[in-house]
Length: 247
Image (tube, rainbow, N blue to C red):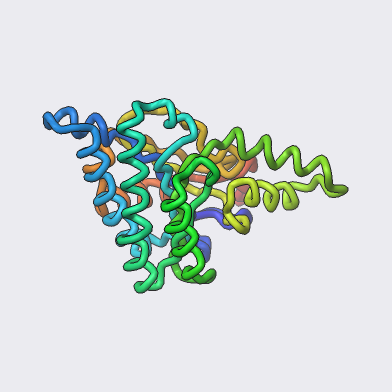
């Protein structure tokens, strides 16, 4: 990974990656097995647990998981309701176990449209999470990259400082993230589709993109490790050209 000053393969920051995953394919996974789409989403929750457990060994410091786009409210009401129940189960059952293992857990995205019980579960976990832990897991729920930028830009008009640093803080507030996190280094999308689907458009400015045909419920530790290894072979120049070595 590059630290912005040299080749990523020699960087001391290799063990501080921010990896984001668009978790796609749970519904198709279930349909292919003759199951309900809800069964696929429950299987996807198990994949979340596997990936979180594997992340520290892959050198990941921040793991952002895109679970529910703001556009997903357009899905059938029964499916949306089941997804919201799964999110609440994650924060009431899975997240506390992660906290006990020294993992920080939080949510990003709008909260005003979430059920009160889910908001309370998120707030309880966030209150118990401490900054500075080796791994920070963020679930993006009711998230829209465009909407977050619009809200942050509106707040920027009220300030005297239009710097990128100030905007990053305003964007974090718009996302209910609390504070900015490092930009995304690697964005993975499962399920075979090759699109960004309204993800954090500001934070992926220099992200490496990796699209895998693996459906989300099948994605596991080996897939995450392979993705990080692929990332580490890429030459991230951030607009520069390689230094010319003179004889």
